[in-house]
Image 1 (cartoon, rainbow, N blue to C red):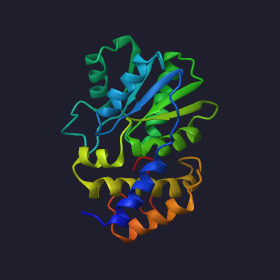
Image 2: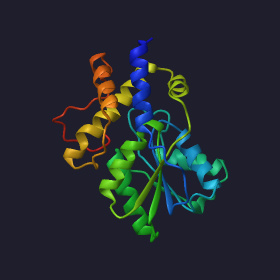
Image 3: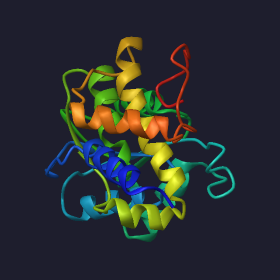
Length: 224
């Protein structure tokens, strides 16, 4: 169990990480690979609602997905989409990306190679990765309009689905830190972090929710 204050602080971060964009028709959707197969389900739902004619699923494997998705995140996402009735011609697979920056840059290269005319992209991610994906895409792919989306879910329900409140709060804190640190490394654009959110982040760090933090001297990619 965590304290009422830490729970409230985590809720603030959860709400901030979501962009609260209204889905609208875009040239393509990019589903960012992760442990969460719900990203594929939500991308399919948006496709069936006519939000895009083409899907790119992007992602290799990571320590958290290697056993669950041995063929790679993007491949498993594609298989899920085909099971749900999306035609194979509407799904491209980018199987090599290992961080958010690579998700974006490798997907862009794949779409360029396919000759796709892209003016807008619907980014589909885990709920707490919406803002990070948006900030990264805006940096790496200028001139394109981005709309962020994820599975509609409350913080309570997401924590229950993962089975570990500690882990979810650690991930919320880690994603917020990257929004603070990565712009000065050139990995993403800078987005304003409201003072109440910054204060909540600092309190959670002091309470020990730090397993997903990166060193401020770290020079890895934007998904590390």
